[in-house]
Image 1 (cartoon, rainbow, N blue to C red):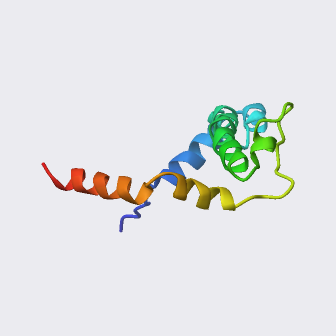
Image 2 (image 1 turned 180 degrees about the vertical axis):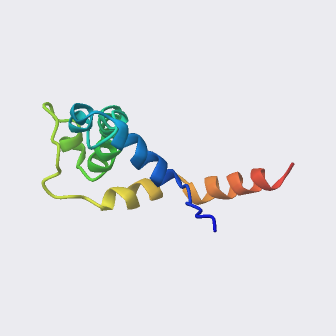
Length: 103
C-alpha cells in the first residue's frame, strides 16, 4: 500500500513559511510592498475625476473662485442640461456611430 500526498500551492507555501526562522516570520508584513505604491497611485489617478465631477456641479462663480471651492454649496445639476442644449451632442453621437459603421 502506498500513501500519496497531494501537493498543492498552499502546502508548498506553508512548508516554505515553516522553514523560515521565527524572526523572519515575525517581520513579515501583512500586505505586499506593492500596496505602498498602488494605493497612493490610485488616489492620484482618481483625484482629477472627482475634481471634474465636483466642478461640473458648481456655478460659474464657484468654479472660477480663488481659492477654489471644493464642494459646491448648492449642487447645480442644471449644468448638464445647459451643456446638452449648448452643443448638438445628439448630432455628434450620430456622426460618430456612422463613422464607426463604415470601413
